Length: 310
Image (cartoon, rainbow, N blue to C red; front, side):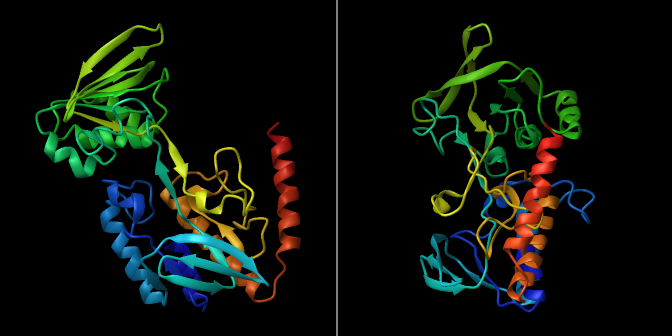
């Protein structure tokens, strides 16, 4: 949305492919913190329509379809979607990321029957129950706090020795009377027949134990939504797209912004900045600016920075 607002205000004809559900992962986030202008945070389901209205007012158009294929053709981009094909002079990939799964027995079978990745959606259904959250980053800690408003007890199972989330969330979680943290613990199986009844875990010493729980919420990392670009543009070993400081990829007219780009800070505020930078870079290019020269200069700076970091 940030890219679209900027692009439309610069006078560019702007089309946003929203996918089948507008808002994506933001819709399941109870509160987005750290975004300028919202000192108390804002729910993702409130932020999405605000940004959609802003982009629409700027002149952007929307298509409720996903990108199916992207091809470079004679200096333009051929964009194939479920609603038809589009030709564009520039493309910004801002497809975000998806939550990784645990990939353990019982997870797929009990999905929607106690296995969830949306505390906002399911927390009210778990009033008075014991639930588990798997993970130790920001998302896991945020969701644990949301669940603790309803559940009798929330058990955080983290494979590491210490929580990895921001201090702001760590302090709140460790001080919460209804939240228990079990470090150095890995979930090996999700138990239950028709619904989740618990999880089987293994600690650092190899000891296995079962924990009773009515639900399991897994937040063990993010996978960038870049599969549709496989073979088109260079990616790193995590599936993220390398860019320069202006969000330009190695391919002229193609930018990447937000969680899909390598070295992303993974914050809402930084993603908004990425989108703005990408739109400005594309506008400069379409006005007659050079793509390759800028890439070469920025790539050299990146190499110097990488060398400085060892």
